[in-house]
Amino acid sequence: MVKRARTNLQVIKNYVIIFLSFAVLSIGLILLAQYLMAINLLSNNLSWVFILLRYIIAVVGLLYINRKIIKSKLLFKFQKDKASYLGSMVVLIFTIYNLWGLNGGFYLNTNTQKENFLFCLGPAIFEELLFRGIIFNRLCEINKTRKLGLYISIFLSAFLFMISHLLIPDYSNLIDLFWQCMIAFGLGVLFATIYFVTQNLALTMIMHFANNLNSYFFLGGVPILANLSTLEVNLISLTVYFLISFLLLLLKKKQKNQSWKILS
Image 1 (cartoon, rainbow, N blue to C red):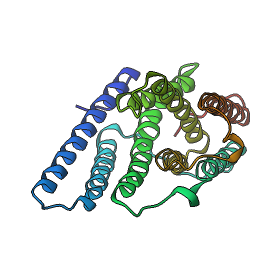
Image 2: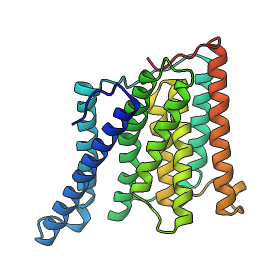
Image 3: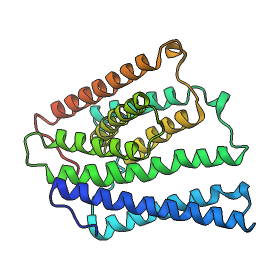
Image 4: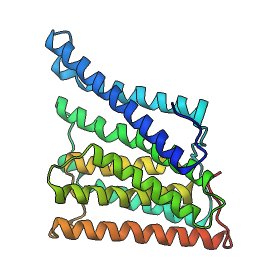
């Protein structure tokens, strides 16, 4: 049973319960869709409808649980400070980079392409609500009196974000799986930082959606990285994610006169 977390461990327990509930929902809808197609009550071309239904139910359910039990504030503010402006600029650059090849590789003509689009949009909304809006926000509230409370909140939320990608892997090769987890952790750190400095969950949703589109539709990136190996791109990406996060947090701390303002 999900409860309003009072400790970091309780936050993790809530994450496990919500994740397992989403897994059961997903499996149930997949089996239902397959059954309806097997008895010819559902066309193969409409299987994407059940993916859409999955995320609608998941998002509505998550919002209901948060409103009634967890009660974390989901922030969509527009901050007028240097850190927020710089964070918004990072969002813009990140989005442009990931959508650079949009005209050449983005189509929604087939059922599979529609499903892939929903696999990009659904997690961008659901996971940002869960990992940044609820988990990270609640961790900030729990750890606000600790000296390294903000860093604990960022890294623990990013770790849980990484674990979710490990439990539902995109690769069977151990090396590729390792890098999938590392990139997910780096993105978790960056997304949490962006949310902290801008206090606008819509911005991390945009970043998440753009990153997913790039991954599912193989849009590529800017041409300057085209000749680099996968290892080099991954190392550069992680370095950039952590460096940007560090600089944004440093700027946020400086403008708050050495006093952190945990999400409120």
